[in-house]
Image (cartoon, rainbow, N blue to C red):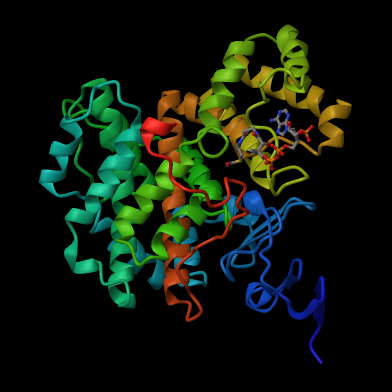
Length: 427
Ligand code: ACO
C-alpha cells in the first residue's frame, strides 16, 4: 500500500497520499484537505509548499546542489555553453552536435525585433531603469506575434519560446543603448548568442566591434548560472500568470517585474553598490554589525537564500570566474578584495553561521559584470535575459501538464466579520 499521511481536525480525519520525487523530499498531497475537512493549510511565502511537479531543475539547499535535468551546474558552467543549456532546459536532454547547430540557427533567426517596437523605447525617459523598459517592451511583444499565441499548440508554444530567448538580448542591449543615447545596433547572426549580445551592447556603427573571447566566455557562463532555479519567485510568477492561459510574452513581463525586486534578481545590483559603499576592508565590521542589528533594516546583499542553507554552488563558480577574468584581462577591482574579506568575516561570525547565511549567486556576479563594462542598472536586465530560458521551459512544462489548473491560493481571513453598511451621515 502506498504511504499515507494522517491529519485529524476535531472529529474529522483524513489520509493523504505521500508522493515521492526521483530525488528530494517527499510531498504530502493535500488536494483533498479542504473538500474533506473544510480547512486550508497556511504557508505564506510557500516555505513548505510544492506548487507543481517539475522535471527541470533540482536543488538540495542543505548540500548546496543544483542540477539541471540531472546535470550539476558546475559541470555545465565549466564545459557547456548557454545555448546548449537552453536546449537542455527547454527540450529535456543534451543536444547532439546537429541538434545544437539547428537550435542555434533557429534562435539566431529570431534575434531581430519588429521595427515598430523601437518606437516603444522612445516613449521612455532616458534615465528609466532598464528593468522598467524591459517590463514594458517584453510585454509589448504580445501585440506583435499573433501567430504564436495559441498556447494549446506545442509548436506555437515553442516558436514563442524561441522568439523570447532570441529577442531578450536585442531588447536588453536596446535598453542600454537608449539610456546612453547611442544608436541601436542590429543583431549580427554570424556571432554566437553571447558575442552578438556584447556587440549590440558595446559596439557602435562607426567602428568594427571585435568580440573578446575571454569576455564572451565569462558572460556565457554568467548566463548559464542564471538560466533556471526551480520554483523561485519570478518563475512562480510566470507560472501563475500563465496558469490563466495568458499570452506568453505578457507572462514573461510579469516574471521580469518580479525579478526586479532587491530580494530576488535586483540583489546583484544592490550587492555591488553595497560593496562599493563599504569601499575598504576596514569598514567591513561596521556593515556586519549593521546586518546583525535587529533595529536596522540593512541586510548583507548577496547573502542568504530561501533554499540554500549551504554555499550557493553558483557563487563558487562566480568567484572563480572573477579570478579568471581579472587574470586574463590583467585588471583588478578593489571591491573584489572587500567581497572576499566580507565573505570570510561573515562565514566566521556566529550570526551568519547559526542562520546558515552564505554568499548567493549575486554576491560576485556584479564584480564580473562591472569588469566587463556594464553599469549596475543593467545587472538585473542581464539576469532577466538568462532566466528567460528557465521561464519558458517552466511555462511550457506547466501548459503541457494535464493536471494544470489556474493558480488560485486561499487565505486566512482576519478582517471584519459581516456587518451592515452605515450611511455616511450616520458615521
Ligand atoms: N543579512 C542579514 N541577515 C539576514 C540576511 C542577510 N542578507 N538574510 C537573512 N537574514 C536573517 C533574517 O533577518 C532572519 O533573521 P531572524 O530569523 O532573526 O528574523 C533570518 O536570517 C532568515 O531570513 P528570512 O528573511 O526569513 O529568510 P528568507 O528565506 O525569507 O529570505 C532572502 C531569503 C530574501 C534571500 C534573504 O536572505 C535576503 O534578503 N538576502 C539579501 C538579498 C539577496 O541577496 N537576495 C538574492 C537572493 S538569490 C536570487 O534571487 C538570485
